[in-house]
Length: 433
Image (cartoon, rainbow, N blue to C red; front, side, top):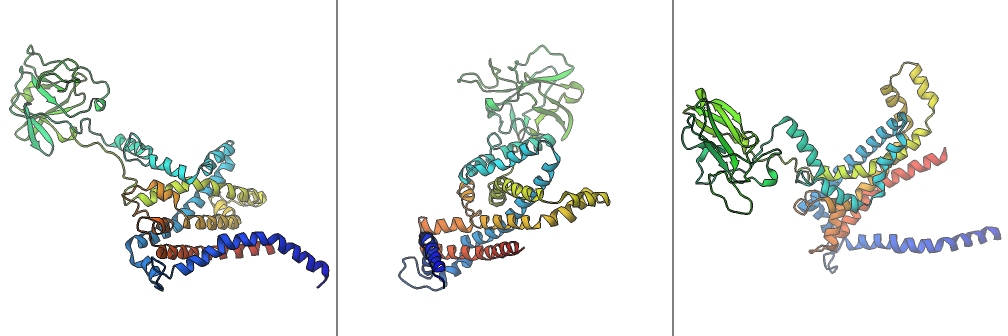
């Protein structure tokens, strides 16, 4: 071997040696130690063979983590890549495409921890705090009328009694010319309908043409007031539904005005019983339990897609810029519609880029930890468990077992290796061209 070649090799080895030492200390040694540790028990004193690996399929929490990791591996990369492809193709057709790409890519500048905090608030159950349920409840209430007084009820001294199924009726029949009092409590002043006015006491100077009365919130702020009496400042129960029932049939209905006053035709309501139907008191619809056991994993995947769809869009957009426009125009001239051009030409030409994005995201989701740890509440964290989170809990939790934690780390490495091998082979094929 020529002296110059040997000298070049020594110089190259000298430059590589620090990197190799760091690689060995930070990568090779931890991998070797984790493999060895995975065959020993909690105290690292007894050899247990494959018992720690068997725990992955026998322990319920570990099985849940493994199942959720498979869901992540299949769903999250595919959805993020598909959205990135759609965004990349559509933004080429609008003038403000650059601004749209900026907005979609912006979540990549946010850390996983910050994104988790954001989506923990987005998925809050209370529609007044959680954006997702605020939208969902708004759509629901557009088609299904919500109750105005979900927790309203009468006091025992009030002239109302329970009728079953959450409804209330007057204790006796009503008469034209005799005003009816319908006092309720249990409605928070902040929950009162908008536009409610101070109630007016029922008057005795009424005609016999109607059965009239007043429905109001029998509660005075700051205390005081008398039951069954309209005290100053007590608001009317605007929108309260009132039915006249005779022989078990509804013969007339009305709703209370802004000041709580109402009237029913005397020819139908005279001698009937007034009923406040259950629809007045249904608990309001609070939306979907996004972070409940059934939906917590899809909810966290949604947060991940929000972050990484922009990454996929940028890479696919760069590949799309290299697609020959002549092929697209030729296909259109031959009569292909936009869907056919997209499916038969654009997607096949972008296949190498799509594979890069898909493989990158698959490696990424196998290590997902931050989002699940922050978004999933303690009550459902077991249902959203993944291997990286279980690795943390097994290795550093209150009941730490480094043997099981090391076994999980080795399994994660084995899951990543095939994806890495496929990626390396693809890179080598690309370099030969």
